[in-house]
Length: 162
Length: 102
Image (tube, rainbow over all chains, first blue to last red; front, side, top):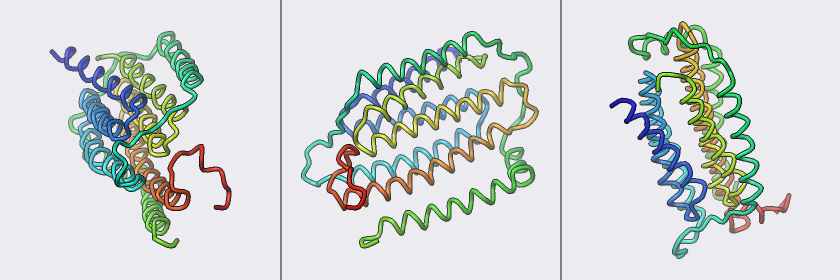
């Protein structure tokens, strides 16, 4: 049962990611990206990463994807019937991407991954919280300043007469 | 589903699809979607290695959280730039954005 669900989620992630990159309608790409991000959250659940799954749904699906659709709507004329995103270099892109994929596949299959003790942690939230405020405190502060700078920068850039 | 390879293969497929999208798409927002796919592939790798790599704690999760934060900041700034581009030259096709000073 769990194997079947894992297979289903993997196929959902990959099929919708394929649709993201080959669809010629920008809105269809955005909706397919929604399914990809939800599927990745499902994979996090399989990896016992409950906090990451919730974060993925809240930030990616609720934030970044809405921002992307917002951008699609703002960068097209209202009377455009269907918003087309053209592609070019299909052959070069296909060969480059499959080349990269084959290299990664060879590495993944040939490497003797250290298996054995699968991590057993009951609930990840408190461990992540204490790690953020002890071991990664400097990075936490730096990234909060980065977020503030990105917020101010985005608001400044998108003003009417910046 | 109980070995690291299956997650790595899914992540590598996602990464390759993202690279394909970044290379072939000409709309700036579609390129941004490809970048999001690549970042998600990296996140899957971090969390899979954290579970199967014999880690004591959750360092991979913390790295994945930082990646999500960076992705959010990147998407916000990139969309502001793209909207400015659209205002200046009337298109978001990256092939037509050629002038250094418009």
